[in-house]
Amino acid sequence: MTNLLDLDVSGLASFLAQLGEKPFRAKQVSHWIHQRLAGDIAAMTDLSKGLRDRLAAVAEIRGPVTVSDTTADDGTRKWLLDVGGGNAVETVFIPEDDRGTLCISSQAGCALDCAFCSTGKQGFNRNLTTAEIVGQLWHANRALIADGTVGAKGRAPITNVVMMGMGEPLANYDSVRAALGVFLDDNAYGLSRRRVTLSTSGIVPAIDRLRDDCPVALAVSLHAPDDALRDRLVPINRKYPIASLLDACVRYLERAPRDFVTFEYVMLDGVNDSADQARALASLVRDVPCKFNLIPWNPFPGAEFRTSPRSRILAFQKALIDEGYVATIRKTRGDNIDAACGQLVGRVRDRTKRTIRIQSARSASATH
Image (cartoon, rainbow, N blue to C red; front, top):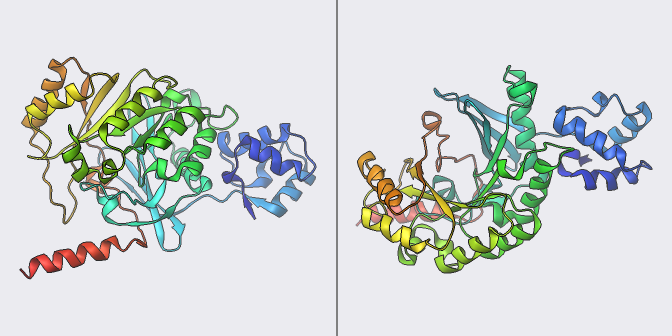
């Protein structure tokens, strides 16, 4: 049974052609699924009953199953969504006065093992399908509307999407690329490229592919002003060091919807947060049009780091501003339900055995 959430408009056209239908039917079906947020083919009343019956015999709209649904004190809402095989991923809605942002996951777990990220410490199971990625936006809009949350002018409440949830989006390129197409399509969600942001740890060849295929706003998890430290914090740097990553950012901006890259920088006490490191960072990216988003680190059990003191974050910010950069400090949202940046953990059946290796290392350390 084909899940219609897995198909973009061209895929829907091909699928409906097999049922003897003309291409315009694909736009109708897409409107029902992504704009009217239909959960049942029978609800598509501007299709003939015969077509609805034929379609229902071979296809369905199968959204994610909610394991848990929690809301933080600040209104941030987090869903734990079952993706089968003992895995579940987290999706987070962040309401603001002028927008509603959904943070979407792309993998069950993450293979990159960044030192400061709780998601990576769970290990990795598999990539999500296009339907599982698109289904997060479809599900969240439906849930919010059902609870009375409606966007401006009666539109769906989610106005912005950030691919910043569990996983490295560019390590699941094909499914993420297809999902981005659905987010942007005027016959689906119709989001502008400026309102869709993809965050990557720096898989250089995939950044170049995205530039050519579907350039959206780009955020890069930098977190260090030199390769030695970044090798420790973001292991993918050993394969794609900073110089090659920054070159890819410059190439990306040739086609990007924004004229800058956002560099995300998690603030770790005594590790990467000195004023001298801020000035080194400013010098490092001098040739890349960019802004900085400084992220107070969010703790999780067993982590080796501490959150930088607020005074040091402010000093780091001032050093960047003095060097001529825009530098903002990310407001921590949803931390009392573990929905803040770096805290998403979901539920992962770790086929990488990373969790076992971490536990073994801790046990060995405790005996010495």
